[in-house]
Amino acid sequence: MTQLSLASSNNSMVTPQKSLLKAFISNFTSESFFSDIASLALFPADFGNSGTIMNSDSIIDNFKKFLKDVTMTAAKYNFTNQIQIKRQAELITSILTVRESTPIIVSYDNIYQYINTPDLAAKKILNNAISNRITSFEKFKENLATTVNIINTYNEIKSISNNLLLYDYLIDSVDQNSNSIFESIKSYRDLVINSYNDLSKLQTLNKLDKPSDYYVLKDKASTNALSKSLMTYVSSGYNYFKSGYEIFDNNVDGFESASIHIVSAPSNHGKSIFLINILRNLIIHNIEDFEDDGAVVFLTLEDNIPKVMRRISSIFGNYNHKAVKSLYRESSQHLKQSQKVEVNSDTNSNLGSNININIDTVQIQDNVVNIFTSVLDKAIGEVTKYKVALVVKYCTENTFSTGDLSKFIDQLRVTDKVNTKLIVLDYIDCARPTASFKAGDDYFNQGMVTQELRKLSVNLNVPILSATQNARVAENLSSNMNNSQIGDSYLKVRYTDYLYMTRICYNKTFLDNDVAKQVIPRDINTASQADLAAYEQMCKVLVPYEVKITKAKEGEKDKTKYMLFCKENLRIYDNVDQYIQDRKQLIHNTNSLEKKISEMLVVNTNDSLNFLNPGNF
Image 1 (cartoon, rainbow, N blue to C red):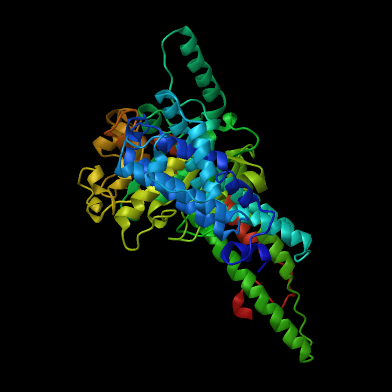
Image 2: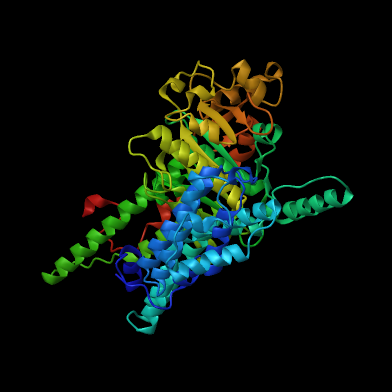
């Protein structure tokens, strides 16, 4: 373990004399700032009438808590003037206590009647407050708002204090040559990534950087100012993604920035598959709008990357999913068999055998790599055009949080130089809240995850798409889909912007009247016998997939659409014609893959040994 990593987990380490954290904290312990607080405490006005959102008692408690904490911090990090800070903080606390017990009576002119200040440093603070007294209520309100914001900033800096200390330890580590240059650079990189994540905690700073959060529209000049802000937002900070699915594009106008969308379905009803289908459609229908450094992120908390890539390969590449699965199985079998043969060959050679076994394991490995590359190039390349990056990440179930997600997005920006434009998380039920996790309380935990995802979507200004599982009652396919079927926590309904209930309708075929009128773009009653026969065959692979909008922050809700889930390539279609259009390519791609599987694993062997016949071994 490096010295830097030790620093983050061992609070007993001595803080360096020259410390970034100490430099920040010292700004909150200056005589001028303490004098400002004392002056506010002495002004004859009620804090609760100052226009802040906090009442009078809350402000006093906030001041006292700050003074106590800053005193402890000064001692913890061994400030040279910690005794002076303690005395000054005690003085202001005494003034606030007197103010609480005798409100309005305490003033600049009579404070010495209530407290004794034998300490010179504390007396200086009080004299400064009296000499620079506040003379108007308007000035009092202005100073109070500023001071409250400064204390909020102090609390935010304390929340990132560990990261600030790591800069100090890194400098010491590099100065002392205690780590290799490679370890030091890696520590620096990790530190920068953590710093990106910490920036989201500095809300006071973020407010300064962001446009005004209110506008007084009273004349042309004020409307023009707002118009310029809106222009800046739509030109750079806003994204709108068409989904390519009728139900989303016609009723909720697709997926826009700063919104969270949840797909909710019973167990084993294609939540993950639908997420991947939506992701594919979002990329295809918005490919020209992505900038060169744009990225879409797919995170799985349930299946590992190989299993996810099987589904992505099938859906993106238009392969029969059984053929893709066969590629994994056959590749594994033959690679393992070649290794056994190689061992057998070595053993026979050591025994002086004249058997000559020529199994080229490297060639088999190269063949396997080539076929995986061809599948992935076709699947990913045809969808993304390699214009937008597709990021696929596996996260450990029940340990990954929204805070981890935020950090990962920062990591992508720093180390991979890509900017995330869309996030798909599979899925909420396997995530955990960042900080306020309650063991065994799924209702609270899943609600907090959803709320944190919504906040993250606003902070990053991107849409976030996720999924959740419905309660068991939703497995009744004859029931009406509604929000009461949500599993574990109704807070997910409350905190999401859009909620889509879905299910695979195994009890129907797409020739049923209610389904046919939505998925067959012509009157089924006028179809020819040949068409009907073809439809009958398609019913074996196309299953009705019902989607209902049950919550829409903007747009139409309670809209239902039948779509078609294809059991071959795992794609979800709006109508049967889309499948017919894909079918020729699906057959071609699958046949080509199956041929490669059967051919590419054949290697040169001697006549007495057929590699593809394990019975010869």
